[in-house]
Length: 456
Image (cartoon, rainbow, N blue to C red; front, top):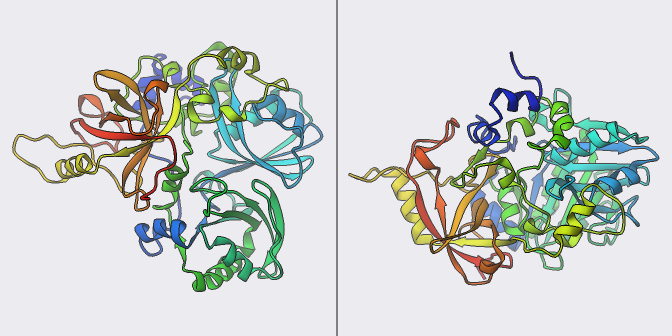
C-alpha cells in the first residue's frame, strides 16, 4: 500500500528513519528560476561590492495566519519574545519540540496586528499551521506554496536587493522619497506606481555592515514592471541580477543553516504531526547526505544554541519546549562556526572526481557554487583522532575565495584558527540517491572562524 503520510512512510521503512532519509531520491532544495543572468561568480561578487537583485518569488512557501489569536499562537509555539510584535515588525521565528530540539524557522512578517506571514522552506509553516488547527486557536491559515508544488499562481512577488549600493538603487527607482526603515522592520513606498512593502534585513554579512538589504513584496502582476525599474535604476551603481546558482550561497556567508534535521521523526508526542504531514511534503522526503552516519535520527537533532539561535530564546512566556530549554541552558552546547576549506585539498578532490588516474578511486564531485547534494548535508569533522562535530551547508563563493561550510562544532574546538578535518563523500561508495555517483571518501582540512568569512 502506498504511504499517504510521513508516519506510514516510516512504518514501511521498518522504523529506520536514517536509512529512509539517506536513500531518499530527492536532491537539494529547488530554486526554480533562471540559473544565471551573467555568471554566478560576478553575481556573488556584486553583493559584496555593488548590489545584486534576486527574485525570491518562486522557491519559498508563504503561510498566512489571520485572526484574533495570531499573536498568542506564535508566542506559544516559538522561543521568541512577541511582546512588541505586530504590524510592520519582523523576526526570525524559531520553533522547538517539547524536548527543546529545533523543529523549524523562518522569517515572520507582521502584515497587520492580526495577520502574520511565515516565509521560508515551509517546515516551520507546516508546524505552526498544525498547532493552529489542533490547539483551539481562532486563526485562519492560508498556504501559498513554493511554485514547484503549487498548481496556482503565487500571490505576491518577492525581490531581495543586497549590497553596499542597494539603497541607492531603490532610492533612484522609488517614485518618492525612500523612508528610513529600521533593521528588521518594514516600511512602505511605491516603485513604478506599485505599492511596495519592504523589510530591512541582510542576507550576507552581518547587521550594521555595509551589506544593506531590502526584501520587497507587492502584487504578483506588477512584478515585471518593478523588476525593470530596479534594473534600470541600478545601471548607474553596478547592479547585477542574481540567479538560482548564486542565490543559495548567500546563506553560507551570513551563517544561516537552512536545513537542520527537524525533530519530528521520533517520539510519541510527534506521532499525530507525522500522521498529519502528507507523503509528498518536504519533511517526508527530507534527503540526508554526507559522511556523517549516525545510528538514530535523534542524533541529528540540534538545539537552538547549536545553530546560533540561543540569543533568541526568551523565557518570559509559556511556549512549547520552554521547560526543556531551561534545563538545557546551563549545559554544554555545540557552536555554529564557519569552516574555510583548504584550497589544495579541494583541488585534489576536484581532480580526483574528474580525471581518472590509475589506482585512484573517484571522489565525490564538488559541485559549484553550491556543494550540497541533498536537502540536509552532514559531514563528519575530526580534530585529530577525536570527533569534533559536523560540517553542514557548503559552497564556494568568490568573496571567500575557496570552498567553505557552516560547522556545528563542539565548544572546545570552536575557536578561531583551529584546524580540523572534514570527511567528504559518503561511506560504502555512496547512498542510493540518484544524484550520488559511486565514489570514495576524501579528507579536507578546514580552519575554524567564529565570524563570517571574507577574502579580507
